[in-house]
Length: 328
Image (cartoon, rainbow, N blue to C red; front, side, top):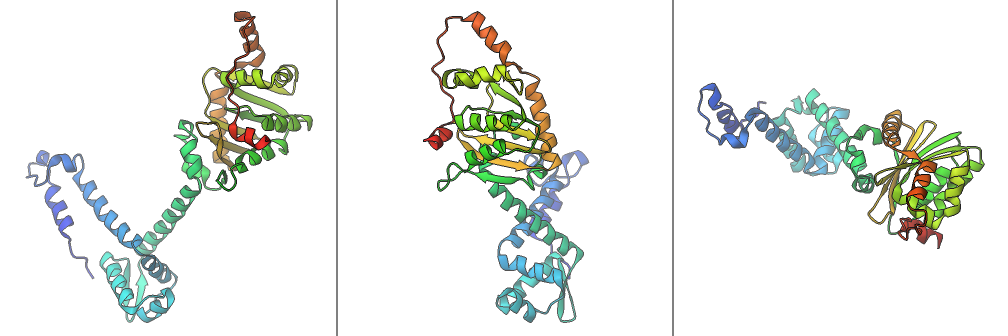
């Protein structure tokens, strides 16, 4: 069966002749510029996608036909739909040449099979996007070039009204129980629970490389002065200070990577972790980029002491409100 040309397709053919080619342009050039042919194809494809996604029964019928050729009566039982509905959907598929009729059975075509696979992939991506929604909306511009495929196998922990501290608990667990000789991290906050987890990792024989910003340093000097002193004196800790505010969290340990997404109140909204090489390589590149602009903690403290020897401790606290509540 040959698909009848719709009004949209006939309109596309008339509009595809541009003034540059010498022919008349029947549609406003601004609408179709610079490539009216591309516009026409995309609109037709959009309608076909909309047709398939318009009802779960349509996708179920195509899925059933991908398994084996079937009669309409068999499809009626398979997808739990009326015979009229099945016949109408099959007519739509015949029109799009996604199926063909051979005898009394309908068989999926190679294009129909490809369309269904693409549809299933899209549904999986949309479902995954929903799982990653909190992470994506809070991670900030650092993730603008983060490959989508790097997140496919990542484990997600997201804070919720029912469990607002799940992300903090997961980070503490990752830090304190890391089975590795070396951990590299970037953090936008300071919190006692994280300090304690880091101390546990170090006491277990691990070496910690930590990048913070000046705001975290000031909050640490105010709220945790002893921890700052230990960071300078302990050879198993290397802290460096970035000159600009940091809005995300990152950890690298052996061959796994972890990213933390924070809201404007410094609450950890989502944590993702994965041992995929793609995520690790991307995170490792970001870590190196930020690390290259840092200075050693001791050097920054010495410079601050020279500039303001009598400066009182900064009152500004950047402690993570989520972690503070957690401690209470």
